[in-house]
Length: 297
Image (cartoon, rainbow, N blue to C red; front, side, top):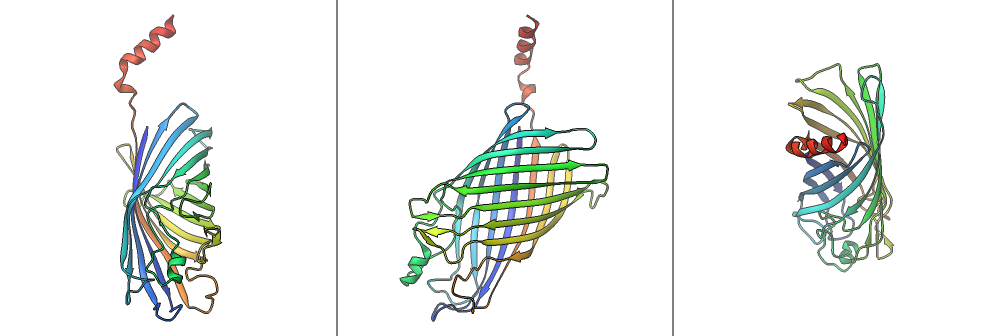
């Protein structure tokens, strides 16, 4: 059984000019501090079951005069839970070789989601917010993990994950489909602060969201980030410290029909993760002896 966890801090620096009279300029930072917890249970030599849960706090630090559109606000609690069944397709443990997993799963939302269409509330002059801890939509997902070790000291690989919504939630909200990809490389021959260097290129593409069949104005788009970090092996545990910096952000956070509005968005991130494998077979020596006795007959 493998247990892991990570603490992720994401900073979205978001600025735009006044969109409509009285709405005010927007300058603020969306700060998300999220704890991700995952449990991976080996079912047999080829299959394992993973459960990932996220909880934390998201906070908007608004620099300006508060109004129905913008203010200091925060959301806390449990986010989405992902249950993934992974199949080990290939695993060459010694010398040059590759390792490949295929995963199939579901995304289970929590109740911490938006209960009303924020764009409709805004058009009525009512106070609203655009974020919460969960999107509130059930989804299915597919995943590919591939890593290759050659003769060189560089080990590289990648992870791709596609999430597709099943149906709108009870509030009429339907998320877009989202593709997340990460290409990574580990430089095994080098050590910095006793850690192995890690380099990443991450990308995200998402189609438009919908509220009651109408396209959400500021949804859809792509994000690309570069990252780096260090990996330490500490008494059988893997500890990773990493960061991400913005390269590309194509999502129009202001909305359609606002091309004449000056806006700027950048996404930054830093994370600390931990993984450890636990072997519980040693706690059942009698079961092992019984198995050996059965096979002897």
